[in-house]
Length: 164
Picture: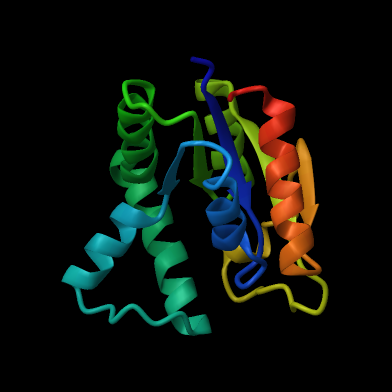
């Protein structure tokens, strides 16, 4: 079975999770976020799960600190990729915001990249991670204008990857 890894990105509210949900109708999907381990640490030290500008900056800064300290987020991605490779899943979506981390994943896992865009959303600029979303040359750009169109684009992407 052919397996594909796609790094997915987009500003908050752009429809990344909805896109992945639609993709899962057409292929077996493994969904992972590079910030999951960071969120675990953040909860231990008092983060309540909110996504205010202050919270987003805190998570971005914490990811940066843990990356410098022990590369926690990328190591968790490597572990997830290893689990994906032995699973029955066909496509893995890895949510990553930072351009240099996206590039690491592309090189390490032969990943493709996808940006989900939605008109009318303000770019989040309160932190490095969110402010850098569009600073990468993505393989695929998906425009989220209607749910029907988003699902069609998910189906077309899966079809183009020839994984099923």
